Image 1 (cartoon, rainbow, N blue to C red):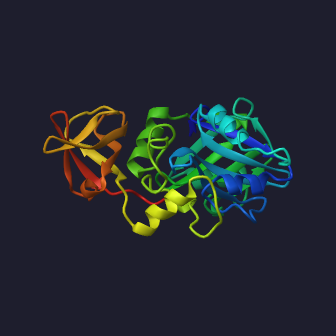
Image 2 (tube, rainbow, N blue to C red):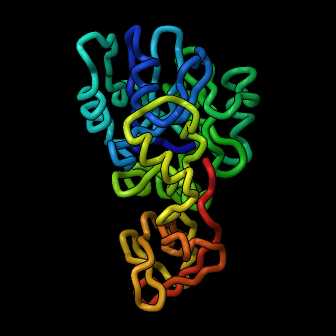
Image 3 (spheres, rainbow, N blue to C red):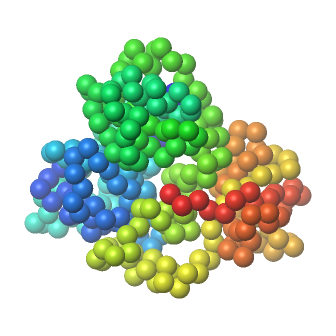
Length: 290
């Protein structure tokens, strides 16, 4: 169990137009979302670059977005720019008031089931309440994965919490992108492998034309890849092939040997060898689809 407060942010969205507003502002199809369910979506700039990625959870009277940590003020400011005078929608940062924990690994389902019957059978991004605690089925970084919003105090005290670095190691090994490392305004959702958060059949949204064009052409300039290094490397380092720029390292594991990075598409195949400074790195797998 790991304390993810600060790693992710929580933004409560209220108002009669909350679903319609977020639907027209982001890549995912949010229409028809029902209480107890959730959907992933990406907020993009007019040129299709990522502002943030969020899991949107539906409650009877509101939506709750699990978004990038320490980026909630930027996301809320960005969203408020597009609120028209007749839009009934309000945003509230709940990050400080509602701690969030991550539950991962072999015992995750059993621990979640202890909190609430049926938790182990939750579908991806669906959720249920266990008293004040909200249990969300999250992308599994290995085995089962859950987010616990407002976890009960006795649970956090009964289980030792892993470090953030261990969570990052799991995330990197799974190829899961995170704000602000892989999710930022340098990249588009398709390059990050976030196809599950993009609808290609919905109406217009900000950045839709660029994203639709890239999908229809089937050509991406770069792709998110998992990397294995012969020696420790650092985030932010340039990836090269034969001395020429080939991409960038975005996240590195605690031992510096596993990493995520964006590589030019022609160098994104498994087994491709690249160089960081004098260290050889190998593409372990191409981008994963989330």
